[in-house]
Length: 444
Image (tube, rainbow, N blue to C red; front, side):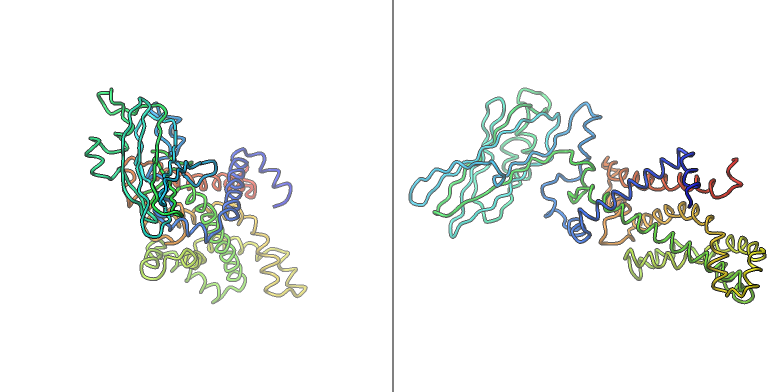
């Protein structure tokens, strides 16, 4: 592409918009790969509940509150190991120590939290610390929500505590926040206080606690059924999609053009063989073949890419390129090249291909999203790479776990939007390039 042709792109607002979106997607891909290396991303994505335990399960992004009259609660986290948190330590003698942690927070949401979990860690030799949890509401009520001993690593899920539920008359996440004067369950807004008192029985014994009041919105993209932050999948899906689409489009397009040029120039049995292979390949159903490969051989992204390239080389484009090369083969400059002794390789790669190469650029750009959609389609069918987080895999997880039936539309719409944005951007740029490189379309 020369400077004049690049300047012509600026005459098409759609091409500029498409190019800007593509550059943003490329920038996001580079940022993702640098800040979140592949091994780390895979480890996080496959970590499950243990890695993502601080996140609520299956909730929409935080920004949905901008469009709601009743605001959904966000996560509230208290961590005794955080900077600035002080423990009130009172020695009682004989190795006994009283430790008090106090946490105050303001609750302003219009709905109840999703659940409440306490994560304890303790150090002791023989006798575990004994805990007491007291909940103080804005209207002055005090509620004892548990007395128990803690092990070295212990999770107290008070939302699933049947005895506490029976005592309070409702699940803890509702009863602890409910307004007692309201006929229907309504959150009582105001400042709440959580007191965590612990009694240790050994001189060096200690404990720490992380209390999480899980909200019903989270982050920029929400979470899935495994509490995973969907931002990770959306971010890493970008370089995976662009790499798959670009590699497949570039390799197949270049090889297709070179094979068409070779067959056209040599003619005879070489051209005949290429045309017969192309016609057979055109009859093969690509998607069912890739499904069989994914089911019976491998679901690796790179294996699928290899077969996509193999099936895409002898495509119908060979016949289109052949028609163009047939005209160029009879041109005067080709006869002149033969007269001064140019070899076959020089004629193919220095004279035939460069003349048709401008036609390749628009079709290559438009071809990229088709391969992106192909990879996503396989993933939606459950045949995507089992390791990499991709847009199609997110959609498949949403489908398998009934996201639409549960009203979790964000789970499907976010990766779908990224797919449509990618296709839209390349299509706008490709159509403009087609007008620039194809003079017959300039007046249309």
